[in-house]
Image 1: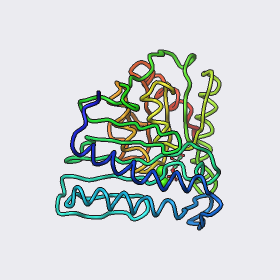
Image 2: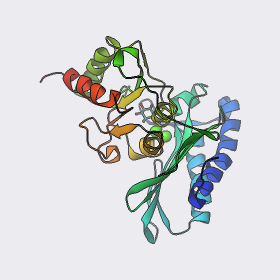
Image 3: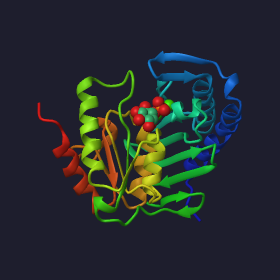
Length: 270
Ligand code: IPD
Ligand code: CA
Ligand code: CA
């Protein structure tokens, strides 16, 4: 059985509670009103309502903690040493298209260190949790990253900048990286939820995942999941703090340096 700290229990309860109306919405997509925040970046009532619910639940249980959430930004609390990082729906585009691959992501930082993480997909009921020093779990099953040692046998996930995201140069770089990986690996996937991509690396479904230009809320919980499942997570320059730089590479110990090298060499020379 996983060890659940009191804070992790609070996070799980909040994710499950917010997941219920979200899966109802998912079943009745046509009733959702969709507004445009920018090209291809739809913000639905569901994002906002889910975030509101999560913040209410988390701050009821931990009133002083600070919160950093995608839709409403920074909520400073008197307790500066604890911070929840929330993405109410990671994979909004999937959600809006009826693709059951999206998740609520909640992480907790203590003194800037990730200590607890939850990634919950209400459509599949997959609950990924991690507690620093106590491992990562999927529905009570302990997780371990995959053991494959070469890119030639690895299933690799990524995210590519889409309409309205990134400059031409950023898109070119991502596509050059994709090309480098597709020519060396048996499979590449772009499933559209960075939080689940990382959770799936933790579960050994994907061998590696990389993406550039993400935000802390996309990856905070997933980074802890991969680390607690025995994987390595850095940014794409090999630095330890992907939340700071927004670029992420996650893989097992053997693959991580190979992927880092391959992606570095793929960057187009300017
Ligand atoms: C997005 C997803 C997607 C990634 C995007 C993110 P959202 O988050 O994680 O996989 O490629 O960069 O913005 O907008 O669905 O919360
Ligand atoms: Ca996101
Ligand atoms: Ca989101």
